[in-house]
Amino acid sequence: IEAYGLDPSAVIRLVSGNNQLVTAGAIDDGGGRLLVKVPGVIESVDDLVNMPISARDGTSITFGDVAVVRRAFRQAEGWSRVNGEPAVVLDVRKRVGANIIKVVELARAVIDEEAPKIGEGVKVSYLFDDSKDVRNLLSDLGNNVAAAVIIVMVVVLAALGLRNATLVGLA
Image (tube, rainbow, N blue to C red; front, side, top):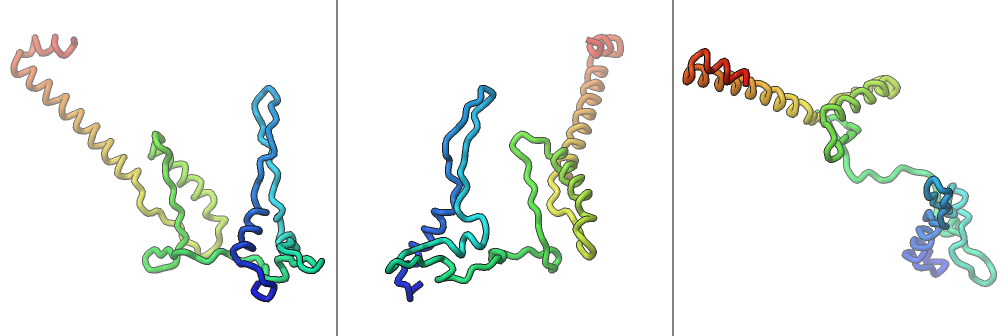
């Protein structure tokens, strides 16, 4: 980049600017509005290599002239470990208002269906399952309601007698 006298930040801006999905308008077909978008110039590695970034003395300088372009994975920003072993962690969250128990059941069903396709030596485990706490809270709530009804019935029976307590209970 220095040999061509180019500004690195300008080259980055140029590449980023040419790799945007641009809205080209909308079509209203009576059943709804369809947005028309034009894809960016860069669709393959060759598109990036051959993209002109500058022109000097009648010759075009391409991105491939100033950089080595190859497919690669993004540099890891962090690492996950479970019990000291490297791991891939999938964080599943529910939407606001969604039933956490159903979300967990659906997530487990999908994971259990896809797990055999992953390969040998890969272990699937579940961490931080909040649905267990919700199930326990619902169970405790049901037990507390049942206990409260029984206590109220005993107090009414003791205070009013069997005949009146039966009438109050039926009402």
